[in-house]
Amino acid sequence: MEFNHVSVLLNECIENLNIKPDGVYVDCTMGGAGHSREIAKRLSDKGRLVCFDQDINAINVAKDRLKEYNDRVVLVHSNFENLKEELESRGIFKIDGVLADLGVSSHQLDEADRGFSYMHDARLDMRMDDRASMSAWQVVNEYSQEDLYTIIKDYGEEKWAKRIAEFIVKERADHSIDTTFDLVDVIKKAIPKGARIDGPHPAKRTFQAIRIEVNNELGVINKMIRDAVSMMNKGGRICIITFHSLEDRIVKNEFRDLNKDCICPPELPFCQCNKKSELKIITRKPILPSEEEVDFNPRSRSSKLRVGEKK
Picture 1 (cartoon, rainbow, N blue to C red):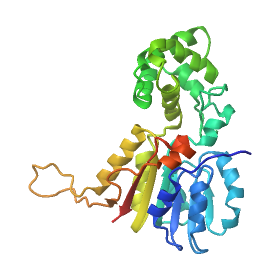
Picture 2: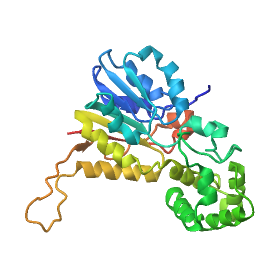
Picture 3: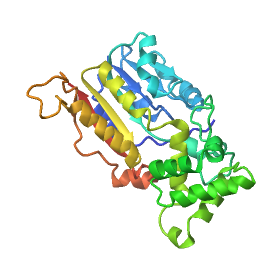
Picture 4: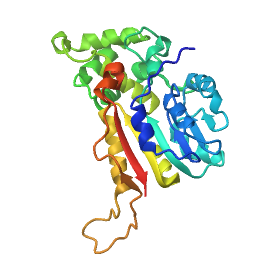
């Protein structure tokens, strides 16, 4: 099985994790195992790396790619939303570092029959976990016009969201929209030709929005961060790579909230919440890929790395 995925901001992640040879680390989004392999290399036989991925293809490929580190690597076929539950079920209650590379992997985009890409014709799917019941087909063919508009506007930040939703509903009244190219055709009809001369592919934002909805990508980030920080030893690091403003905003705000002490209203004479700062923000501004990395891997262009340290 081909599983090509170039690890983004690899050196920056490894450097910022401050890996201890005997520590316990979690890769929330193993993908092609590039980051995982570099973490595992730096662990002793007393260290542990727990690798999460909801894509069974990633799990199967990692069994081979990480086989020389079998004594220190645990593979978990699950969404990182379940990080705390999955770790505790394996007797792991404290960790020293967490890495998450959010969003869709290169493999998922390039594997045509997964239905993630507007560049390949395939049945509308977009499920990162093929055990999930809802696919992109249900979103496109069963969601109301209002719900489609909201998703495309909020998750895709698409200014033509209203027209695209209207055109989808009109098209499916005659026949279902079954494939990625069927959907691309509808989007192209909805966006005036003059508006799509420059910029990204006209379907890019809508496909992103539908993919996020199918996989609940934004809804699981906050829980993962809070659970990871709650389990982290003092000095442990959390490194999160994002690829668009929606993800980055969630991570930035969650880090900020975990960094705060008292959150009581300012008019109260004394603190009643007893909240204590849990996280030191290491990156006040996110780490961006170098020009060399972007030249080598254009998909890294929009990536941002934010790092926090457990207090």
